[in-house]
Length: 546
Ligand code: G6Q
Image (cartoon, rainbow, N blue to C red; front, side, top):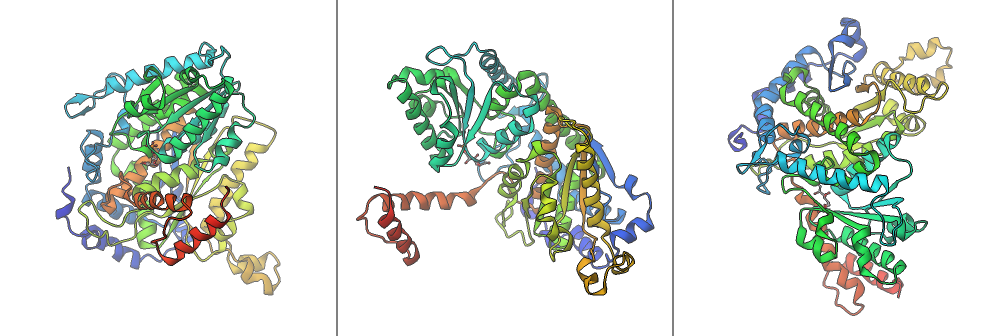
């Protein structure tokens, strides 16, 4: 494993210094770059695991890429990657291996953690999940009163929610439409109440998905869901066994909640929350699409894992995407990246990526505890196209901020209808073109525009984007796409030298909320807090529901 502590600070490393020099002399625009090299479209492209990446419309030359790959070499990205795949404790602040890739390993592979091959355990849980999913799907799993399950509610938050939500929404075309899956995550009771108000408890199954089985939001929702269920069964707690299953690493807490441990689906310490959707956390996904398609999803992940592990850095999709992000963040001052899927089924992909990227690399110190010294994770955001074109694309095209964009598109639609899909895809290509090449003042004038409007209608262009394309959105492609971004985030983190697998930054707020809660519920508790918080608490107490 790399000894990050002894390396020169990132800013002082030779590859970084070379990139800074290169950036200073980088004056060519995308128009000029395309004029100088008419074959850019076939030079700057790469493909793997069914995904095609066009990165020609980036502010890069072959020299830029050589220097960026040099940086990856200097930062030991490959050995850091290998340490991850081999089960090294690369999450050093939590002394954990980082082995989400083992969740997608084929049954005949072997991945050892502390001398134990974890692949047989992974496949044993997959088998248990498949048995259960089949029973729910074919109706042989029934509720306490013998009725077939029609609705599944996954209760979880963060990594125990966003991946399953993304997958369910992305793969609805492959799901059993007689089984509706819903997701409750927010501790705001509205989430649970609105998700259950039209449901019949006798035909509802809850999956309580929590690695720790101690997360306050999830446990509060699970308790309230149990109350809702038992009210329909006259308080008969035997009903819990047929309406609640658990996904967790903590058996004791699952048992304490009243869930039969036979209906617990386990995973392991070495699976981080935001990297867990291929584990038992994906149970809702498997129930929705069936074990065979879940297996296709895992194959897609595995295919991209394999590519990341073996392809040369300069042809490696996650490496290219990660390096391009570092290039824009640290050498162009970009503070955000827009993720624009032109695929309605991927409407929650930006939200999923927000957690993946920002919880992983929203850090300011290196593994050794020193300041990184340069900007780290950008803000990830986005919406499905073409909706964004009628709202925030204005800023992308003419605003004062540089926002690199990833467009995601598919050649075929799951819902071919009239001319919809051609219109959709024409917009992807047009947006990427407009961002890159813009429209000059002379071109605006040549369209007959009156002089007062010319400045308003100039499109500056020179705004970078990637287009990621696949034939169609299938379980396999979705797995490959998610793995692509997981490893893209990994590469960024390895360059910056941060621990992409902890999230200490979310702890303080949780602790403070624990201290504030009794101040809200005990009207006479003295308020030994700052004056702003004290006043807010007073106002809340005055208006609080009795
Ligand atoms: C993800 C984070 C976090 C976690 C949630 C839920 O990487 O660790 O989002 O997934 O806090 O935790 P539990 O699964 O333990 O309830």
